[in-house]
Image (tube, rainbow, N blue to C red; front, side):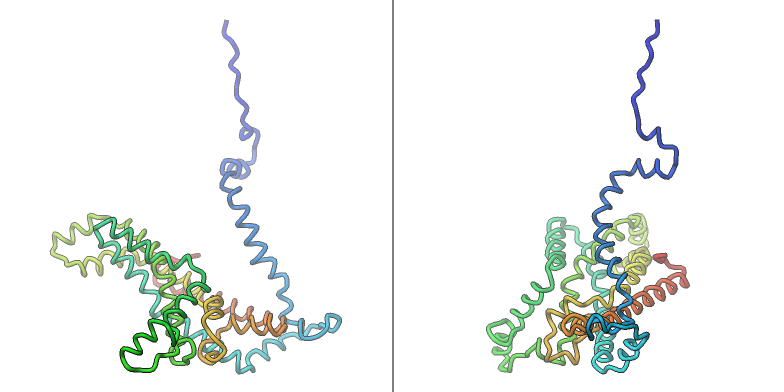
Length: 314
């Protein structure tokens, strides 16, 4: 006599909807996404519900006197010299960071890829990745200790050369260079990770064929490595343009009021007016302007990439 086979119960079999079934199969991934999704919604989307403050005089009058003022804050924005100064500084500093900072991670990744000693390669990687995990408060303190006019390396070098030490943090001439250099030091090593991963995916046979043809190391990099990671470079450039105006923490820590003329940027200007001076509606207007500019930069870069048949974000 044949005994009946006892079938195990699977909740998945009870789900008829194919979309819900797919979600149930990947339920662990969805559970992992819940916390970052909640944080994202709480800190990035919930504040958007207050965007109408930009069209009111909120913060500058009593709550019972707050009223809709239309585009008055935007007109006031472009008639304010301190905002135009912050806008000019933001554009210049951002362009410097793109011009000097964007190629550095690519160069680092190519150089790291050429190192054959694994222990030495790992040591170099660890050293150059480390600054990424430091806050701008710590980085600002390190640079201040190195470049202070007294009891620092800067002061010792000036003494050996018989010159007066440079007041880097109080110099209108050098403050932008200081921001660019510290930004490169903080992010170049970590930024090289993506390019290094892209380089590791290149077919090794291409290099072997180039060596057989007598190609030098420079020609291998120029004709094989760089074209192979071109799409990654374009994607990273689009991402970089999207957050090019996000320099709040760095400028807040490293730029002192004495050099605001050369170092003040849109975000710190919005912080001072919106929080410190309690002109919340006006500060919101500045933030909206910055967000719109960032969005336009991403859309233009994305469209340009598509025009040249390169990889784009969307």
